[in-house]
Structures are given as C-alpha cells and as structure tokens.
Length: 140
Image (cartoon, rainbow, N blue to C red; front, side, top):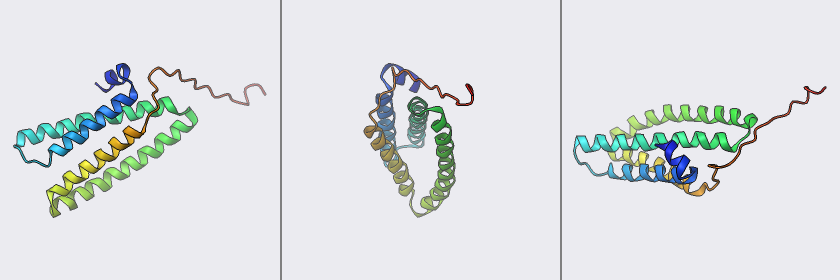
C-alpha cells in the first residue's frame, strides 16, 4: 500500500498520509474500548508505521548519491537499533508508572514523525536519479 500511494500520489503525500494515520490511531489508544478494538488499533499503528518506514528508505535512496547513502544508512540503522533497545527499556519502566505514559510515548513519536513529514517537501516521484561516480583511476 505504501508503494501504491507513493507511486500514484507522490512520496510527500504518502509520507504525510501514513504519519497522520499513525497519529490518529495512537490517539485512539487513550480510550479503553475492548481488547479487540485495542488490538485492531495496534495493528493499524503498526501497518501505517511500517508504510512510513518503507517510504523513508525510498526517499533516502532517491535523494542522496551512493557514497553518502551507504554511510547514512549505516548511521540511521545504528541509531534505530539503539533506540529500539532504549525504547523497550523505557516502555517497561513507563508501564509500571502508568500505562498512559506508554501511549504518550507512542503519540509523541507519531507527532514527531508527522511534523517531520509535514516539513519535508521534496517530491521525488518522477525524478530521474543519475548516480554515476567517476573513478579517477580508470583513465590513468
């Protein structure tokens, strides 16, 4: 679904759509409905967050040359893994203080993603990426 939205609606539109949907689904987690509704909401959060994540990698590939892209991808992966470990630790600590803090963490992360998506305005849908790096040793 992220690929279809990115192809027909554009990268910027899809980023904003998915990040906005994550915010909406996260906000509904403040209200305790039933276990089934909560499960559906969490599936919605995961679905739209996964789409947002895939789109970020598409945008990175289309915006940066190969020499920068590989270093940047490693840097992003490092911080993502570190955030995953610290996030899980923080999740357990916050849950014992108040379950609403866990939901607030989800909403806060979703709002940061939404704000970043709203600030991002470089459309790369129909952009032709010329990624040729000349090696000086070829002609020597």
